Length: 307
Image 1 (cartoon, one colour):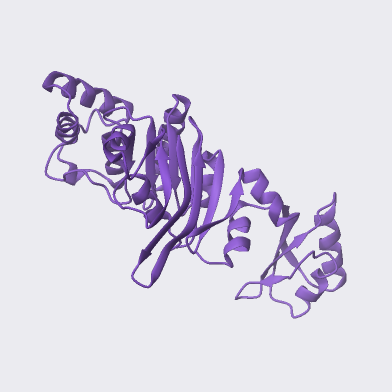
Image 2: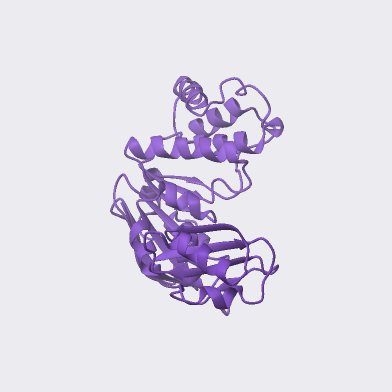
């Protein structure tokens, strides 16, 4: 449903995209991760016909984004980083207006607005002015607006930025329901746990090109084994040295020297063995954990720690 090959885009001396490839199959979630300025939003603008690539090609449901922009626009919904609804209108008025602009009759527009307000838990707030909505309510209304025409392809550009944990979880539920109904979704996000929860496939973008792609499990395997994390009761100058015998890479130490972390080739009982070794070195431990690699580890390893 979403295909991009060799996308290039330059703004003056700045290269925003440098041969980016993307692909999302029908009914799946593709998450695009990358540090600020990596080219994520530029890619979304090209795929949604808001910008033209300097080179390369992209198709949405078989339609070329440059040669057939009108056909593409009929297939997509877009929820940008900033809510695009009108603050001086009510939630219902916003949805009715968008429906009418999309060609629905007055009766069909009112019916669709009522339906969407119910689906997004906004029925009680539907006749309130949007200016009084919370951040989570605005984001849900913005997503509802993107779905007025029931588009088969949806672009969400950092949809949960700034939301409280409860609102983020509610948005995740909405996104899962959309995908279960067959929507194809491209999601850009700064929250790695969000990609871990929602994405069928992840593309990591840096300096305008894809530097890694796969399922979250495949990307985590690229990082290697487990990760040992130790929290000391108080800093100790020999702690890092004591951990090197277990490490499969460098030992990272926090600014306060109490927390240490390193990749390890995990094995059963490793945490107990580490505690005993540190105790033998007269290093007191508050907590020891051995955990599998996270998507955060993948991101930091691939992008050199940029966020």
